[in-house]
Length: 403
Image 1 (cartoon, rainbow, N blue to C red):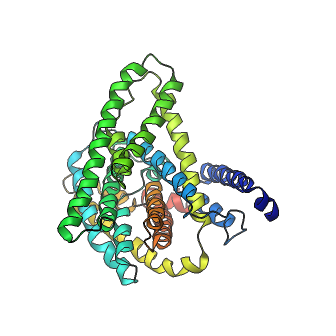
Image 2 (tube, one colour; image 1 turned 30 degrees about the vertical axis):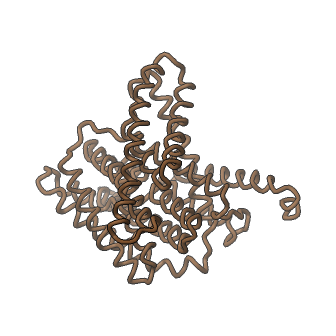
Image 3 (cartoon, one colour; image 1 turned 30 degrees about the horizontal axis):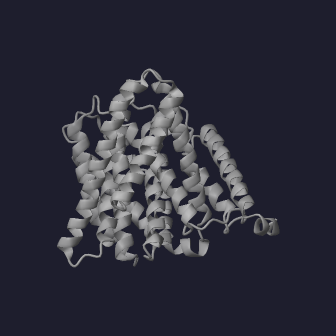
């Protein structure tokens, strides 16, 4: 079979696509059957298919084609996530307090935990920036399984979406500050701010254009709307990257926050379409990332990832305690909020994206960044899943009868 791949290189890509889709199918079945977050079986399947497992997938993230594929997949995931933000009936005071407190504590304490285990300064900063995001695509299934009050579920999911957008911007600023070749701190701050500001401006322009175009899409079919949504996401990213490198993801987030397709008569079809695209992109990103995990390199990262995860858990407890004071929530609801701290798809996507950008810029540490984020995501998902289930369901979660 290896000889076949050497004679027909395209066959390796096609077989790899078959493996990715097969793993995605099994992961979806396992998730639906046992209630396990999809990311967990995706990671397990990708790792098993990689060189450290059965050796079925051999993909290098340093290859330009792979970097391009990863970037487009991340664009789809981010655009789908930001399009889902619903600003109606949101307790903004609580959201702002949670976001400000959680972000500040994360940016202060996570780099310390990362540097304690001798991760480089850039990797430690990028890990902290990426860990600002949470996991609304993981929180959603949590809430569906636990069935808390609708208002509380909406609060948690909206908080996650807001933090995802904020985390993307902070990660862009952090990375831009290391890739500007400045002569001092002032120059670094100026160039980083310029990249982010340009991304926000261009993304907003694309978002406003998209909102205007939806007036004409009302009379068109859902197929036209689907192509337009996909075109808008990729055009926003591509044009902004041409204007200012490393500003594309910020623009995608800004465009998604402004874009509104809910007025379209076929909104349900568009929502299903973008969710399917996001699921496919997620499968590609996570399986390919997991397939590149080298056990020998990953084992030393378990300790720092565990320390970072523990820090994030402590931050979440403090954040919820301070951010929900006077919010009118019951103590049990606040306790549930304190146990919902998973990092998810966006964290993995950002970790993978910036790992490929490390190699593109000739910076060392990309693999360490991606592997650390992957382990943090797995640990926080599993811990949050168990803790939230025990808090909200109590004895029922342990299989103890209420009678």
